[in-house]
Length: 118
Length: 133
Image (spheres, each protein chain N blue to C red):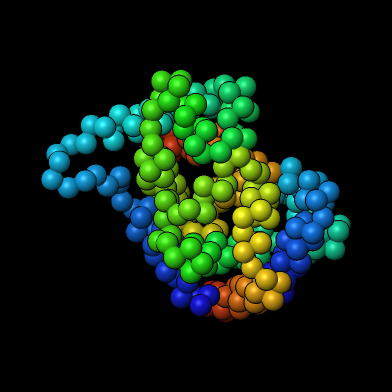
């Protein structure tokens, strides 16, 4: 379940400013390559599944807004690199237990999508 | 939550992405919105052509960028930016035959970069490449 590895990665960069600084400048291919070196084995799809669920929940449930171009969350992307935005504006809105829940949820959704395709 | 949420998200985004910019009803053609759209597109094109200006702008907050755009002669509001860019992103996904959801490949170009950079350097040229603008 590499959605869990991505959530572990988010927590690692959240808790280590130097690690965040290293990864924040990397493009997706570099990030995935180096993350695996560091023991975080996830794919782009895994990351997207988790991020999609977190952002949707944050906008619609936590902020109580429609999920569209005017959602407040997107304003916090400005001036930041992408990983920096996730660590500054998305991850802190959730407890570690909640993040684990989103990882499990994303893994279940990915499994169901694979089954329906098969 | 997950499947329902994802389904709602995709539905909402597709619906939103399939529409053109909404104008207030009963006021006839909204020339202000059209002017603002033209200003925003011209501003983004300028950023795409001037890496020095993009480097300066991409690290700023949204309000600062909008104020700087106005000072450069390209006035538009935050709401006008939100409506137009969301609409363009959704239309681009449609044109590419992709879902406008968490897996839309444009988001993959965000890693390591700033949001404004992706809009100016990847979204805007994509509109020309696909014949959308």
